[in-house]
Amino acid sequence: MKIQATHEYNAPPEKVFTALIDPAVLQKCIEGCETMEKTGEDSYDAKLKIGVAGIKGNYTGKVRIAEKKPPESFTLQAEGNGAPGWVKGTAKIQIAPKGEGSELQCDADGQAGGLIAAVGSRLIEAAGKKMLKDFLRKIGERL
Image 1 (cartoon, rainbow, N blue to C red):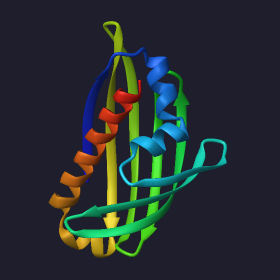
Image 2 (cartoon, helix red, strand yellow):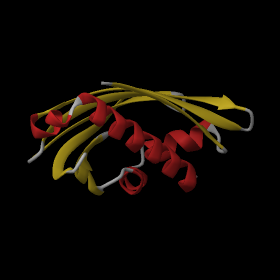
Image 3 (spheres, one colour):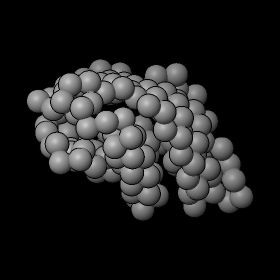
C-alpha cells in the first residue's frame, strides 16, 4: 500500500526536522505508541497498541532513521510483529521552506501480513492514512 501526505507547519524546516527525529516527540505523536527506546545511532525499539477494523493488538518493532539530510529530508523505516500479524513500512520525508513556515511531504510504502491483512487492503490503507494525518497534526501541535 502506498500513502502520500502533505502538511504545512508554522515553524522553520530545522524545527520540524528536529521534532520528527526526536524519540520523545515521536512516542507522544504516534497513535498507540507506549514506548520508544533508543538502541543505537538513529535506531529505536517501540511498543504500540493499535487496532484496525476491530482487530486490536500489541506490536513490538524497530524504527530506524536513515538517509538524513538535515533539515531537508530523511527516510523512516519501521517494522513490527504482534498477535494480529506483522507490518513493515518505509516513509520518505521531505521538508521545504514555505512562506514563514515549512511544508512536509511524505511518501510511504507499507505492507502487512497475518490476521491484520485479512481485513483487506482498503481498510488497512484507510487506517494508515488516518494514522499518518493524525501524526502530522500532532507534530504541528507540539511545534
